[in-house]
Length: 199
Image 1 (spheres, one colour):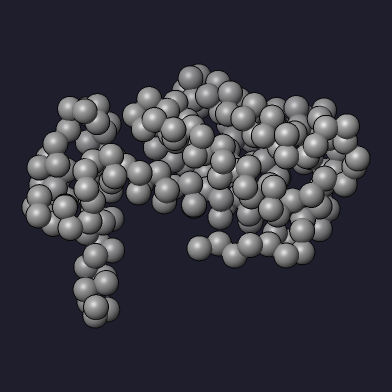
Image 2 (image 1 turned 45 degrees about the horizontal axis):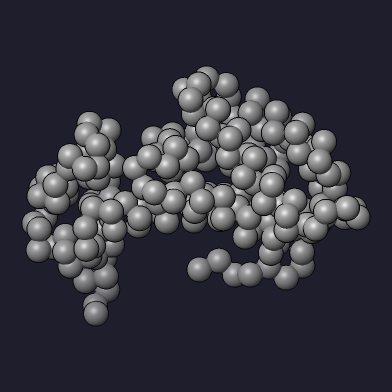
C-alpha cells in the first residue's frame, strides 16, 4: 500500500466519522442510513463497506478514538510527577477539560443510550490506566483493584450529573469537587516507573 493510499484511507475514515457525528446531532442512530452518512462524507456505499460493516461499527471506531485521546490527555497530567495527592485538582482537571471540549460525543458515551456498553468502555479505560500506572502509597483495608473500580465507576455518576446539568459548571469546579471526594478516600499515590506503551 502506498503512502498516497494510506492518506486516502485515513481521510475517508475521518470524513465518515465526522459525517456520522454531524448527523447524530439531527437524528437518532436507528434513523440514519449508510447512504446518508456516505453522501455527507462524499463517498459511496461501496467505499463505506470497505472500511466499516455498519453504522454501529463506525460509531465503535469513533468511541475508541475519543477514549484513546482522553487517556493520552489524562496521562499528561501525571507523567512528569513522582508523587501526588489524590485531592490535587490538576490530576482530575484534564479529564473534565477533554470531556468539556468534546461534549457531544461524551454525552453519547456516558449516557450509554446510543452505544450499549459505552459507559463500561469509558470506565474500563480509566481503570486500566490507574491500575497499571499509578500506585497508592498508603496501606488500605480493602484491596486496591476493588477501590479503583469503586472510585472510577462512582465517578461515572459524577460525570453524568455534569452532563445532565448541561455542563453548567466549569471543568475546574468539577475537578475541584471530584478531588475533594477522592481525597476523602485515600491520600497519596505515586507514578510507576514502568508504564505500558500506548498503542
